[in-house]
Image (cartoon, rainbow, N blue to C red; front, side, top):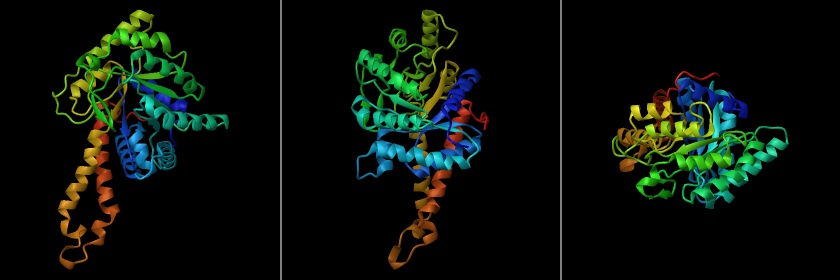
Amino acid sequence: MPVATPEQYADMLDRAKAGSFAYPAINVSSSQTINSVLQGLTEAGSDGILQVTTGGADYFAGHTVKARATGALAFAKYVTEVAKNYPITVALHTDHCPKDALPGFVLPLLEASEEEVKAGRNPIFQSHMWDGSAVPLDENIDIAAELLPRMKNINAILEIEVGVVGGEEDGVQHEGSNDALYTTVADVTKAVERLGLGENGRYISALTFGNVHGVYKPGGVKLRPELLGEIQEGIAAKFGTGPKPLDLVFHGGSGSTDDEIALAVANGVVKMNIDTDTQYAFTRSIAGYMFSNYEGVLKLDGEVGNKKQYDPRAWGKVAESAMAVRVVEATKQLGSYGQSKS
């Protein structure tokens, strides 16, 4: 199926909210990892989201140059073409973009989409994240308020982060105090007062409830997914809306228990970012392949090795399928398994 139109993406998120499930949003950095996600979503009968960080976009453009907007556009064009061969629908998203990266990442991508829309076509990306977690909350909201009308004009969705996700992702590291890892109703109230609840443009919110990027064992981080429900109730009471007025995003989910994920989804999470676990699944399978085929992939003692084993397509297929298995697992955890309308 083609990449989602803005209307299809909005419908995906609405269906997730109404059906109490969420979509896996998988970070990718190569054509192989893109293929892995498309394979896994197809095997799961689930729609989903492919996303790229600043570092991933740099890698798409070539690791010896710094051209992340170019890399992000290349990512989008590749997915847009190859996704036509798969019976599921995917949306394209740019992940964490801190303030200093806006001029070289999200802003030129917005301009490119604005040109597409002027020409009567769809935006290139269906959503973009502005990560203002490293700046004061007022400045975070001010920048979101500047971006939101531009997003609305191209029928795209803005993702914001209110609070701080600990740990490190693609060179962006947050050490904040423990209190900063838990978003408050007051924080979100400030954002809603300025941004509205959809009338000024649609946005999704990454609220923090103890989340940490990177690798940790279950129980190694104190997650409080019940906090999301408390914030939803607080905002509904403050602004007189129905239940769960916010569309939420779950960041830093590696090592989360099934119960923690289920409670977060029940409290309005419609998108969960997945990166560390899929990276490991991909690379672990390559390591296993190389150890198992040691004499074939290396030219030992003057021998010639086995071309069929060191051909990158041989181990590449293994890695793609291994990562696809982890994608399927994510759809089961999030409840999107078998939910595709395609």
